[in-house]
Image: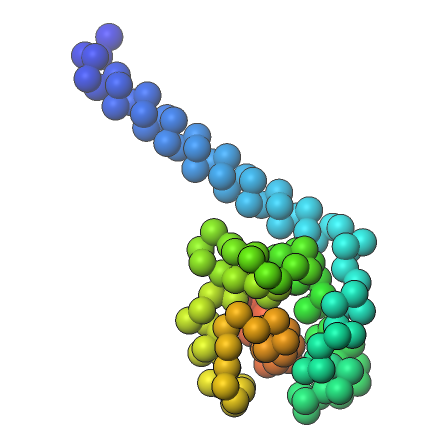
Length: 145
């Protein structure tokens, strides 16, 4: 039998590995759940009160592309924040309906040419989410996969 000190180290190693395994499993299961439950996705539920979205599209894209962008944006916001904005924080410092990290928001705002960007503005988050999807940057959201 190994000495007590070595045995304790071995047991803590098993606990740490097990914890990492279960956290990864939880993340995978949550991603699958969000993907398989489109009933929560209702694009009109939150778009009607926001002027900067695809209904009055500021993005130079075709009609079929607008539909694709809206559907994916609705899926992402339902999965990331349950379509809620105020006070919705992610584990890594993401905020709002589109769960933008502050740094990513301002980076995308600069690329998109957004005037007076405000990370905590719901309309701007939705506009930048639409813009990012149209530009092929949806991979920044786990729920887009």
